[in-house]
Amino acid sequence: MEDQFIIHGPEPTTFLEGKTLGNVFYNALLKQQHLPVAMVNVHSKETISYEEILTYSSQLAQSLYNWGLSTNDVIAICSENSERYCIPVLSGFYTGIAVTLLNNNYTERELSNITELAEPTIIFCSLNTLNKILFLKNKYDFIKKIIVLNDNSEVLNVDSLKNFIDNNCDKDFNAKLFQPTPLNSDEQTALIMCSSGTTGVPKAVELTHTNVRIRLIHSQDTNFTPIFPFSASVLQLMPMYHALGLSMTLSYILSGYRIVIMEKFEPHLFLDSIQTYKIIYTILVPPLFIFLTKNPIVLNYDLSSLKYIGSGGAPLKKELCEATIAKFESITIMQGYGLTECTSAVIISQLTKSKLGSIGNVGPLVTAKVINPETGKTLGPNEIGELCFKGATVMKGYVKNSKATEEIIDKDGWLHSGDVGYFDEDRDFFIVDRLKDLIKYKGFQVSPSELEQVLLEHSSIQDVGIVSVADEIAGELPAACVVVRPEKQITENEVKDFVTDKVSYPKYLRGGVYFVNSIPKNNTGKIDRKELKKMFEALRS
Ligand code: M24
Image 1: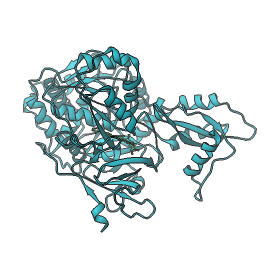
Image 2: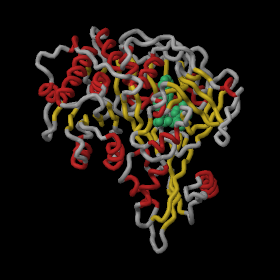
Image 3: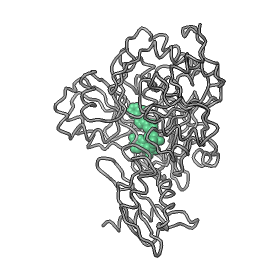
């Protein structure tokens, strides 16, 4: 009876040529090698063609093998968005070497957490991240080599991508005759991504070739994605270390678009890039919709080329959708909802029937249900509960953390998202709340328990609980409730500075610091987050 409320996504409109990701991309790049420009970096103005991507990625794949890596080894990338970011990613796909994506804004402390889990042998970095990666290499024996992606000359005795290829690739190598390694796509790890999951502690999400392939199938599906001709211009601003940014970039490569890359948001450059490159499609986080609708500088630019904007990573309010459509009449907004543990978006707006305020419909090859989190009972239309997902986009698991894997994926294969929502009679989904231990600042993950661990290292802090404060622009801000040790003193600024030194900028205590007498705990000694929130609301009012 309950099974009627289990929702299966539709059959995809297109399947892909090639079973492994290596085949899928290698075949696409061969077909697209005549296209003039694959990527433009708006900051450096560097460009790369599809033929160059094909050549460098296959040369690098062979160089990695010749250097001594093989299927099941791990490499990492720690770089801001760049036209070369995807070269090691594609080489990994061709060879079965897993690729770990490290957040380029992470501090050395945060990078250490994920590096210890993934144990990469080689790290590809940029000149901007080189010092942090040198720190990691000194700390961990398993890191044998650093390669700088975005420079052709050797710096600090570290190889550049070009040197590494020159020294390791066969001289008579012909990229057009290269063959990706046959792999078992359902088992083979393609990517290792960082997420705090539902319990807050940093984790390494292991995604298989099949997982990533499903996102690519979604990206070619005419019901869920606008399809443009080769060389249509799309803007890639979301960071490529994140599941959303990487999955969109890979989809764009597969489609043969001209991918206009931004390393970071700069208001004038963002608007100028849309105008200059005649951008037709981009994916943004909700705060940028506020910028587009409210900032007067937007009026100085011709944005008429922009026909589709995708939104994901955090809730986009109905009113903001309406304001965007009122300002840009010919724009279609595509909402999506995804999580790193499900590779990418599992719920996406359908092009023809998108309902404002809804996150969309279950995507192809994905199965969803809404359950009562207390009883596990499957709920029907308009009943609010926890969203659960099953199917080929659900991750293989967390690296070296079977306990957390079992907590999030139940014995029947359902991934419990920790998000609260419902679907209506049209099977359009809506998000209303979050059960899990996660704050989203401008779409970036902030783990309350990770911040609590950091603050507990301060000698004046006896106990601490992190709460989320709603914010119109950022969505949510982390705030700290702090219990000071007897006989000790600490100011709000000292608490903030202590955090700022240790974590990346989305985790700064922008929501404030509040001094309290105690932190509510449940029977097992864990923070009672519901009570903490109540206590915090009372404090603020
Ligand atoms: P991760 N509304 C409310 N909360 C949302 C949300 C939404 N639309 N999307 C994500 N969240 C929150 O950092 C939930 O609490 C992502 O955010 C992520 C990863 C890959 C793809 O992961 C959720 O548990 C996407 C998001 C994505 N979103 O939209 C699209 N892709 C998309 C849109 C248009 O782990 C938590 O964030 C077209 C195509 C698309 F793919 C997960 O946080």
